[in-house]
Length: 606
Ligand code: AGP
Image (cartoon, rainbow, N blue to C red):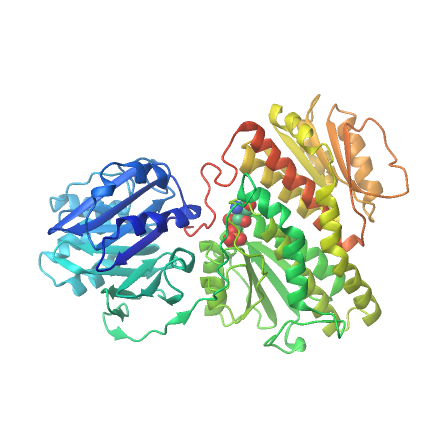
């Protein structure tokens, strides 16, 4: 997943490109680069690491040119260094790329036999030399269409040409790409977030399309090279000036924002005056749906798993879930009565988008639960349920996770009511509890529960386990993922009842084990699983909810009590200490909390 920007203007563009690259760093931050056209030459500057390193390059401030492209990289082929950073250029062509060219090895051999010299280890460089090769005998448009046809895999491209000093070419297959329109200048960007600071008027390219961006107009073409018309969209102007404020990290701010974002979600979907839930313009009759399949990656997959428990509890629907990268290659049995729900914070995750595309090709009902409403997954789904969490910058998802499971819970409640699977009184009771949730999250956030000192033990361990049953099991997985991706410590989420089938062998003296055991129907069984690990020397951090009943166990290393509510909603509260545990572990280790190593916020490659 990388980020692309291009600007075609009548003013010098290098500074604006650098600023846009900073907004794109959430898509990858191994290395960065920029290329501009000036005095008949392609000028290229690249650097390892953050965009700041590129900006500090002394050559940048004298970089001329009113046409340029820029790139932030998350390495897929070739080490993360300046040599492999984009743009990649020949004498005549310079290219920035997001995606993976699957037949790059074969193409590279062909081009080397044609005398082309390669400098990098990247797949992207074959695009440069392929276009250069075609330009020897074809015009620009035909060189583009022929090159695109030869590429297998996914790409979003920005291309500039030495001999075409008035245009930028953009092309898209499988990785998002947008055009932005400004005053006497136009833009190319990986997504609307990169363009929002310069314009709120955008056009999204669809797969197979390419465009020619001049400073005063843009032309669009289909993959055959035929000109097509595309509509200009106005982005929502709610572009909040999103910064860290007084927080040290975006993640810290996003954890603390959760009461507000939950309030926003509830306000959006719960009709307080009529004591009902609004899923506006839901496009299907409830009797057209007899099953639901939820699909996502990473944290979004954990949201799907959490929703599975709620849908099973509240509706008679058959419920399936799948990891998007598995679903897209599985021999799926598509049934028209199935509603496919795609959960994605960014709405740009390549595997989830591919799973959506597969369902659309099979004429399935598709619904997106996303945070970015202008995203590819939102645009391509039949129906969208935005989670209204505002921008989430921290790569480790926090408020978006709670936002996702909130909307999925609301959907389960509503469909359960529509299908008469739950009584109206029970529905009203649950709605009443739901309205209290933001306050309970706020109280849980305020509970100073030693989590900071506890995190030291996790940092000193070579690994840890996170255990839960039923509604708590998805949260155990999510808590383990947070610790892994922030503090780089191995942590494994596991069903508490499964430990005796193998993983118990991992338990040794002093090993930290988180046990999620709220006072729900699984409490007693989980406590006995907890005793199994304590008996083998584990240091158990028990996370439960406040109750007048004593905890029926001893030799527990630490206990954290979250606020109490109905069983359905306890997962929201159990998540909070786990987010903080991961945050403080990483803080103590001095790691980059908002941009953990090897990761990116939007995984737009498979
Ligand atoms: C979550 O902390 C991770 N950053 C990652 O697992 C993320 O949830 C996953 O990549 C899916 O992203 P999406 O929600 O934007 O599709």
